[in-house]
Structures are given as structure tokens and as C-alpha cells.
Image (cartoon, rainbow, N blue to C red; front, side, top):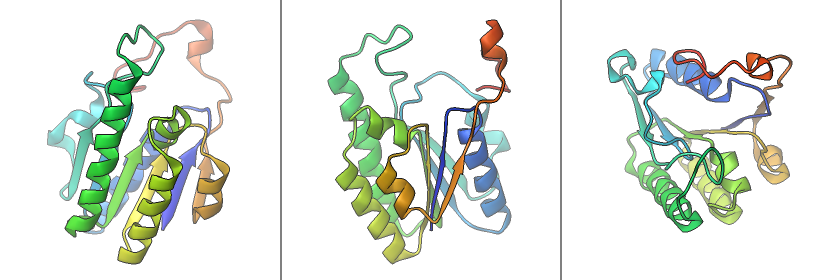
Length: 172
């Protein structure tokens, strides 16, 4: 099954983490690979609160081309390619029932990875009966069409509009 969580609102990663919690609660093994997100600490990095059967790995180098990013685009492409390669390796390892690719839609939108590679990943996961969850704003039409479930998170109201900065434990 392919689940896509997209849209411009807050909560896509949070929804995927909720899906992971539910799956682990049923005895399933879940791997979350994060594209884009850099080395800064967020609440989900606290391994002490991870349910049994869950693992999270960060593969990104941080925001791309915004908020002071000074890295060459090639470094971001390399990191995204490595993370996608890890997804293929883990898909073939037999160790996971679900693999979450957090911010993969953004990585695709920024041309850090190629759509043909995601097509191949979807096909391989389907053949192995491994569930995939793709998150990130801007999911492309083909991914939406191939998905079994698509949820769109809409930004109705957010304190960012009032200049309030992101809060640890709530926004990250």
C-alpha cells in the first residue's frame, strides 16, 4: 500500500509518526527515512520514546536554498540519493513492514531525486507487500494517482502568520 500525506499545512510528518505508532502497536516494524531534515534535534529523535520496532534515520542536510543554506545543491542531491539508496537496501533487507519517506515529495520537487526511481521503489515495495508512506508538500500527480490513500493537510490557521517562531515539541 502507498500512503501519501501532502499539502501546505502543518502535520504531515506528525501524521506519519502517528501511522508508525499505530503500526508498531500491531507488532509491525517501521523505518522512517527523513529527506531534507538536517542535523538539528526534534522530538522524534528521542530514541527513548520510540515504540518497539521503530527506527528513524535522518538523511538530509537541512533546508535547500532557504533559511541560510550555503551548501552547494550537489551536496543535497548526494544526500538525497544516499537516502533513497538506503530505502532500496532496506526494502530488500526483509527487516521492515513499512517504510516512511519523510519529505520525499519535497526532495522530488527540488530535483534532488528522480521520479523514475520513486516509481521503481513503489513497484518493488508493492511486489514485496511492504507499505510505503510518502510525506511532504507538493506531491506530484503521478504519485497521487499511484497511491492507495492520499491525505492533504491544509493550512487553515497558523501562529507563524503572527510572527510566532516554531516551538520545540510542537513544530519540531
